[in-house]
Length: 300
Length: 300
Image (cartoon, rainbow over all chains, first blue to last red):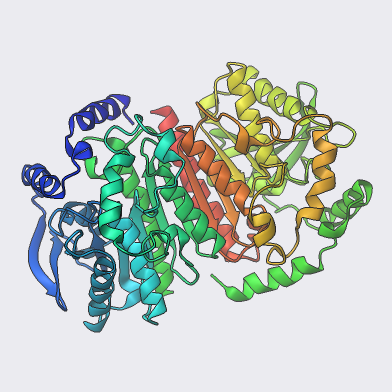
């Protein structure tokens, strides 16, 4: 692993304007600009599609004969980001586990606050099942807000009596919209990009008139009993570190098998920088091995 | 994985007298009886030895050409257990990572309260280094109290300026002698063997006149900065679950790479039952892969 890579990434992220923007429209514009400059790897093919009424992007990896499916939820504090923007990370997971992927364009706040995103997530999951994909061949995954949404989706699917996927994989999940993690303070300034101020308006927009401490909004407060194994990754340089830790704690308390995998010295969703950060690729490789093992286990 | 295996183990442990015995001499007698009935695997060869003034048991695995060394600390609430009793688990780790092992007979309470165990642990580690073993080839490992002691040993070694091992692996660490984990209450009765009452007299004996909340006694309160990667495993059916979770939280907060790996529905140090519990063997296999990766990383 390279400390040069980590320092270069840290310096780059400290230049990023995203963490300082509070206006949602400007956030979306700047993020879209950033994403438009990042080409998809040439071996990923994306296709616009739908699952029921929910828009999606389907992702195929060249040379992979898919035996599994990654259902993916992008990040963006429930306010920005897109299924297309999540395609690259979804594809990175898919290529490691002989899978294709579907990235979900769930509705965003403030236009569509909670429970719109959770409804779209569960509708997409149910539609995949209705198409005949076996639950045991599905990995539900997500990053940041999409990581929290992935867990909320599993809880809602369980409560509806749907068969549950083989395993879930969440990267730097935003799992506490009450913003009470101690790392929100202890990692302030160490996190090169994010701080409490970036989350406060987005949480307010998403939560609306609901209680932010309900499990469907903040899965660290959910009853996670009966969920499939969870693989949770985060970096030690992020204010959301405690969201990952407390999600693992909740899962373990509720008898859910869980792996919490913390990489030191790296920021929020560091896996996204796998091309320039050895730790990112290594974390994706470790996740791939755990997901493959869970998929095999589900078939045995 | 077999739910039959888990249920059989749970029922067996509920018959175990160990958790209900508070007299330390009776504890030692009953534990020695139990251990004497458990033969070592035929491919492990053990030899009594010393490291400096600390008695040890050296463990060689037949057919393994050792390139690495496991320095192992047995469990037993700092009051019972022995280096020989830890030899089997130490050997199970060693066989997975091309290593030999040394299991340490650190001094026990009440005869020798804190800091005797930590002094012996660091003395043993320093003696291994003095023999010319490279720190990057060493895995420090332990179970239960020995897991807490392994972390305390690393902190003490760091503070002495000794080179640190490649990685540490702790199973169900007892890392909080103030007994404040919420699982101490929420897992009461779910843990088939242990409850607060078993820990109270042992903590008092070990802590003596010291503050149980100092990091050298309860590593969840230690500054873990600079420690090598930690691999922490526990079962979801144990009152010490939160010790494992909070140790991972502390490590992540201090920028230490950490993997927390929780297996659901299994008890304290479930890896010890690997011969009759698929989850135990699988957890040792996962740990072996992480330890091997860290040992390779230390050489690159």
